[in-house]
Length: 294
Image (cartoon, rainbow, N blue to C red; front, side, top):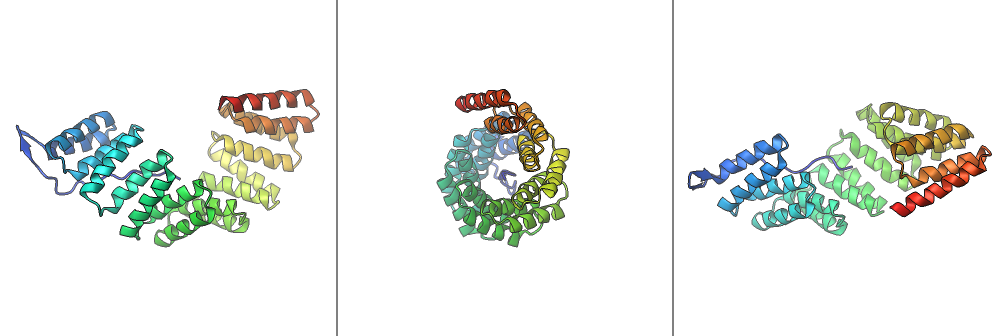
């Protein structure tokens, strides 16, 4: 799961006087503007710092961070490229470039940068966590699990690491292990809502439908704005032959996301079970229409 951006430490700022202005002063101003989320202004100040000192690594890194906040990941990558040329042994810069590459869906490049960050410093848990996330996206669930193992070894009190490992185990059909990791997530953070969703999915696979329903209810109580939670609860209710309740949950999911085609498909099945063949056909048609829009 994506949880932060690299921001260079503001240490030993160099000051170069040019017509009364300094690179360090512009950098400090940009840093303040970042804190108040004036990202365009911050980018302008970092650019001025770079004009005065083209070798100002921290300014390139900080400007890249502002570009990421502005969703311009390609511009961020260009700045990270420059920073790496000037400072090729900084693990955090490789990590940050990998993060930006991940957003552009250049997963092979992101993996290479996470690899390089780990080669420079193999004691940082988030490097493994983010590399695991990319491996998960690519369908390498075993590789992802190994990275989450390492992240947990380094930082055993981060709830998301256990959740992420549980998700990998779920995809590997290691349901007992996944259940254990979702429970561990909640042990570390009792309000980690997605862990209840993970437990609901896992217990459904283990045929503990009543337990699954209780966990789905908990997830929805904590956050009623996630369509996937209603989809999962609807599937559980279907297993319990509560087709009316299942249809209601699929309707809730559709209200949250009207383009969620799978919800129409599942609701069609529930309506067919309730004897509403006409309604089922209408939902199947709607499912096809929403698929075409994507």
